[in-house]
Length: 197
Image (cartoon, helix red, strand yellow):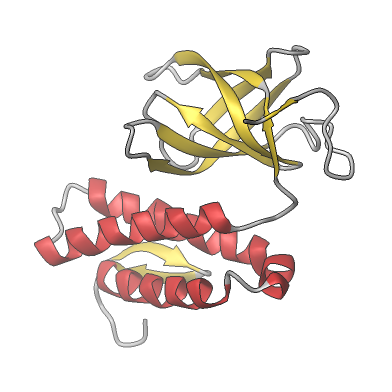
């Protein structure tokens, strides 16, 4: 921001920002998205751009929370609030139609420091990804391998949002990186899932 000499901690919409201005700018961004997210026109025209902004908010808010320089109590509370609010809004964005469907999958993390795998079932599908439950700790931008257990198809995905349910389970949103139509969605239907329920 003009006139600010504080150290840059991240950027929002291409603007490098210090911690103080990042927090204030993020709140303004979330307020704007929150006021428009229920409008069909916004979902059709602005969901992609809004998704990128929300991911930036979440990524740099997480960096603040994990930084060696401990934020003040107020900034810590604001950071947590931003993470939760941005995650909630991101989960409400629609890049394409979402289909309730249960498909058994294997999730695998192949990172050297945190390798794991678990079986899960999808809850919502779109051409670009899925929503499901994961019992392992994940972070925004984590790379996971998703394998369909009904046909063996495999795709690389990244975690674009997550939230903790009251049950203690972690609900996550995945975006596919290596398969344009992993589920075989065609006019709101899939090639082989069972309906969720």
